[in-house]
Image 1: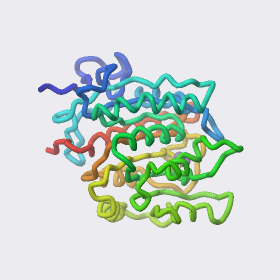
Image 2: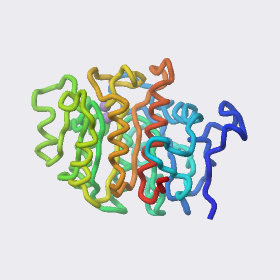
Image 3: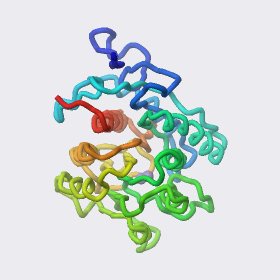
Length: 314
Ligand code: MN
Ligand code: MN
């Protein structure tokens, strides 16, 4: 069997060609794929600065420099997995509720086919319909959630669906194994002093950013792997979990965040988990004046690919 390969920089200049994720083939069907990149160009769930509708396109553009082999970990994802770019979900940008339905409908056959979706967001609203599709196949999933925010608001401006509510809805709908949910990087100011108590009351483990400043997160990830074991696990990575000095191109930045090496430790520390899907959300290109936020997002998605079950290491 021959596996799709990213188009090399010696076949077509890296700044040329169609800007698919990692210059992989763009395909319509998930059948036969081990993993597929999917864009969800949605920003109508955001509470502050918009622009994540442009996230998938910019992440793809910044992914043009990523080469197949991971020189730190030895991962060789394209030696053993069939991977492609599955394009974008045709969301309804005039209607958030309908968009959420469209996303779930889009993901259900992908997940049912056995293809692991790696999602380019999009604001964090999109994780709710994705988790619905996940649970339809796998039952409730474990969750590694990196974010500055807990995203467990009961409502926002009276709305039950928004980018700050998905994990509250996911708990209510039974989509999560709550004793296997880890929220990492939380910080900032709250509406109430108890804001992070609700997730803890559900059984989540909350690791605030200041608790891990200056530290390697490898030991934390050891605990995460021990707690989650072989449960089907989803990884949801909000780029605002990273400090705005590295990733300022996002809608709701919070100071004092995780570093890029810590982000890599988190994702690399997911190796060995039974990952069934992952996303990278909240990249907002209009606020990403250097392109660094999208560049980081693209590379973090590559790192997610590198820790999927079945990846060969050299
Ligand atoms: Mn979030
Ligand atoms: Mn956030």
